[in-house]
Length: 176
Image 1 (spheres, rainbow, N blue to C red):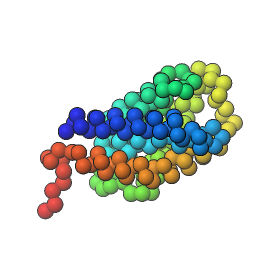
Image 2 (cartoon, rainbow, N blue to C red):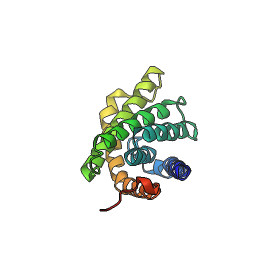
Image 3 (cartoon, one colour):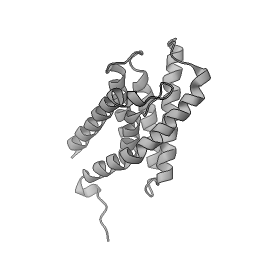
């Protein structure tokens, strides 16, 4: 079953990166679009925990770093999404007594967006990326968070439902 989970996670990430880089770039506002890869990473982290979130974030970020039209130093998205995925997984661990509700998921997406956007921008500043503009950071973060919450409404429940269906029988909760 673990191989099936890994395969599904890889499939989700490849589809997310493909859609994000080919379709969603056409609906960008102020250079910002829905970060579908981040949403999938958060969904995987919420369904499986911080380790899965960090690994999925690293892999998804690395895909974003190398897939055209990548115009930045490789590794920036990998670092940003790995940390955001790990933080989202920690939220799952802290709320393990019950499911994360819709408001909790929305707040997790906003936090993940803020963390990943900040880390990506900070590493860009350290590497002297001319596209980093701290004066527009708040506006761009607000647009990104709005886009991501809207995208998460559909993506997170779907990914979590599918990942929940592929767990071994010993991990499934048995009703008394």
